[in-house]
Length: 208
View 1 (cartoon, rainbow, N blue to C red):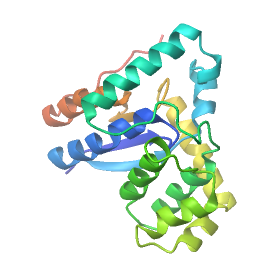
View 2 (cartoon, helix red, strand yellow; view 1 turned 180 degrees about the vertical axis):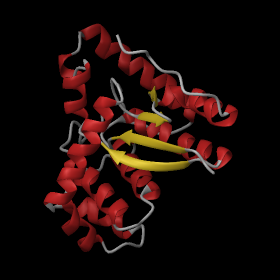
View 3 (cartoon, rainbow, N blue to C red; view 1 turned 120 degrees about the horizontal axis):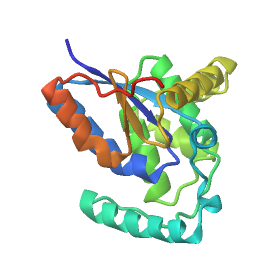
């Protein structure tokens, strides 16, 4: 029986962009099943000690730009350090991802296209026309998905995903949870791969 990895992320994260294809390859190599769980990233920050970019110390903001350049080169992916439409209200794009999951669609290619649109193509993921175009390119009924994304049930799933990510002790996104063990950051995908291939017991922290 294949292992299951719960994939917590938001389309607003450049590190989700860096790790997205690498995670899919890991899943293919190991036979793991991925559960897509979009998260309200700023609520996660508030709960688990992270800070939005604008509230970080200047040195941390500068260091982030260096790190983004390193990972851009390492992953061989295009990335604008300062996208035209960022920060952006990502709720629509994230909720469309949830709606696709709920409709039984594999959302991976939509998420890949949306991440690329924001981080490499200077497109506005808060614009319904942009999101509709991304959905249509995946062969789904864009209007139906967007209508579902606006429903209270999808908003409730968004909130539940966030609560689950907080409970999993993820300080930020993307995060991957395997058998209750959290892996924070796309730079931990190799560790996730090792855990999947070895079948080892999860590392845990004993309650105080």
